[in-house]
Amino acid sequence: MSRRTGRGFSAWIAVVALVSSTTACRGESNPDDPYLLAASGLCEASMRADMGDLDGAGVEFYDTAHQPLHDLAAEVSDVDRAVAARLLEAKEAVEYGLDGDQSELGDAFQSLVSAADQALSATGHSPMPCSPAEGS
Amino acid sequence: MSQVEAHEHRPGEVMRYSTPAWFALLIIAAVTAAGCSRPDASSEGDAGGLVAAVASYDIVAGRPARFIVGLYTADQSQTLAYGTVSFSFTHLGDRDGSDAGGQPPVGPVDAVFLPIPGQDLDLGTSEPKMVAGSEATGVYAAPDVEFERAGFWEVTVIANVDHRTETTTGAFEVLATSDVPDVGELAPRTRQPLAGDPSVDPKAIDSRADANTPVPDPELHDITLADAIATARPAMVVVSTPTFCVSRFCGPITDSVHELALRYGDRMEFIHLEVWQDFEANQLNPAAAEWIAPTPETQGGEPWVFVIDAAGIIVQRFDNVASEAELLAAVEDSLGEADS
Image (cartoon, rainbow over all chains, first blue to last red; front, side, top):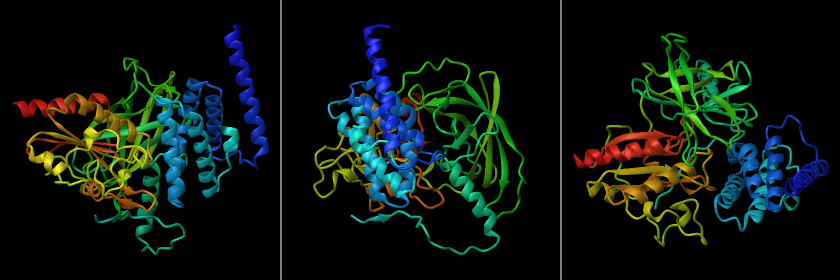
């Protein structure tokens, strides 16, 4: 295993451990919640971005969180359009960061984790497994 | 500027319906669910968990049109991409609940993978395969599908994936008349606000703008559509809300139209109409409402792209998804006709 690969593996273990620990720390999650996978993926993407793994953050974001966030926005727009607006604006900021200006990507992910948590709460779903601070 | 209120479903609101309408309401619920892309909003596949989401808007009886369907796993962790699948169509019944199954089936027809813009894919891949969203995203499209009768229909999708046959279904409604300006009609002479208008919130011109971010893609916001038509040049109009889109297609399609504006803007007009005047207040932009007037039944589907000829007639329209190749061909068709 190269040093680079070794560092990546260690980072991966750290991510998994952190996601696991934060999941345990934050409220009860319904294992059948349709957004559980997306929420975990968003936390992981956020932490990868925070560690400088921007490619990994982008893959994780688009593979697990992107479409479900659209779905969540559609759902929450029926009950609270301000929350939906904040969620979509935060998602757009992350996409902008992933596509180009990455200087504020960490903050963008933090805002998105916070907005997603609000949207999940407003629609009665399980909370984000990471808090906004942990997700950044 | 006047405000246009979008129709809104109010949670907890109790409505009474006549008994004959129950069947229609049940079907409407199924169609609404299948038409959007929520995890609980599409039909489960019969095998392998493949789910179909009908992505077409404004399907009209007697009008051949492209029919598009998104296919993905129930947990949305993977999407079907590449190659060709098969669509066949069954009539479920009329809106009033009558004539269930009274129409002959349509198809089967081949449907090819149509990627959303902005991806660099090898479309020579012949077989459909399940992929992550970061690898490929798009829908399957069958050209010129025609339904003789309005009412509720179901598409059955058959795909050969990894030497298995996957089958899934999705319900949708065929309308008697179009809710959206159609091919052959005069384009609305829309006078939308332009970038820099001090009386208009920049966000109402492009939802990506705000007090600190100028209106992006200024080439799409420098002439009203009415004035563009008056120049007797062809025009391409994208009606979309890049930030507040509830599908994943608005941003890429707006970007594609902007790219075309940079290449062909000296010979053709390119215009973006932002959907929302105020998303939070549920107020549509009056300019966009001239094109897509959401109702509880149509769900206000967007994005749309319209192509208008030099005489101001709509000559093509694309609902929800349009590939870069489709848009480029539409531009070249328009310029070819304009030059001839």
